[in-house]
Image 1 (cartoon, each protein chain N blue to C red):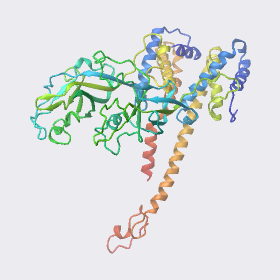
Image 2 (image 1 turned 180 degrees about the vertical axis):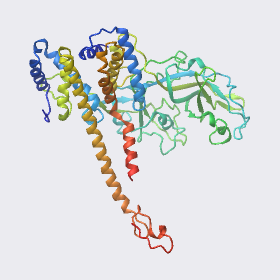
Image 3 (image 1 turned 90 degrees about the horizontal axis):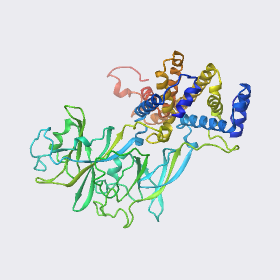
Image 4 (image 1 turned 120 degrees about the vertical axis):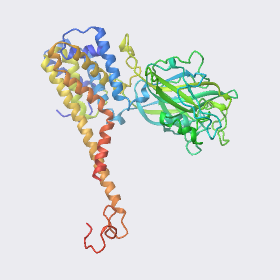
Length: 248
Length: 292
């Protein structure tokens, strides 16, 4: 916060801004920069969480009866809804963990979309089993909350795996800072994005100042935000490669 | 002014002092503040040029499964892993999405599964549990954010079974994971010794000085002057970006020339280059058209 205050001072902004406004601007900046840098810095925002599975399958999905390979139906077990983290942006890795003859086993699940849930019951080599489980991330049709479902829990027609549990690695929204933000700035923010966050926070602060002379600085500051974010300009490389291949 | 030789902290300070004298504000400044401004300036510039000059800043750290990486970590460069009492070999970086399949020696294929002599590693957020399953208290608990964490395989914590699907012992008994060193690109630390060089290439020195001037004198200057310096800084950064873009374009051009040479090596049966249409194949019967 002191860095943002100092730079505002350097830019000649004399109107005093209260700490809460600056803190809000910093939090907005952190989230905006995270959105911009998500594809290039995603490993900085991963969180692991262990989630309980509901013991009863979800009745939302139709049952097509026993699969030709297994001889019993494939059912989708939801993760207990309230436990899905509220800061989830997207899932990265989903693991089904369970106990097998007193050994703890972890199996990475593969992603399945709604369009595939019928198909995977029909092909023997993709049908979900405890050895090769599948997951489906969908939204609750009524309230739009994310829902996670796992298939492949059946050991046989009458028995589920023991103590099933989901380990989820997900991209989490960068947390809002509440107090002493200077101490916390480095957490969950890669060091090469500091500069971009500070410029972006200045940009938000300048927008909130009512003095028209401050607005003259907005274009310059916003250009600095773009420049500081342009380090890994993937789109640019892709565009140039496309240009090159089109010439060929 | 164009500086191409390395710039020491002392030289940068002297230059700033001359400017401060010109604005009659030298008496308000002290060396500590000036060093702070210079460090802040070059670090900010380093953040802008990090991916162009990343080979300037490399650090090393000891790693094993679950090591939390330092704050100055930017991205990995090279990693060597091995058994605690054995030789280390170069590990390959894999995305977390494939890491857990490659580290699972009951599901990975024999040709790509992680082995002692072909280890893999990845970098992601901290997993609070290792061999043991998550405790009841950890289930459903929203974790706190952490720095980036190093994971490597083969590792018994991902797969406690001693034997692989094809009966091979993947790790010697008593060893849970590999150990090694990670070399990574970093954002370097502040320069405080007067004779130490500022860790940026010569063509950025002028930008460093402008930037430190902005930090140091911005509040003493007329508003127009501060805006001028900010504009100047913006121009510098645009020029750096443009130079970077130009060098990438040149590299692609060189690549294109290289591809053209390869292209001509392949020829059609009738002797025309592969890029040209074969006269035999393309010319209609009875036509006297000539291939290019």
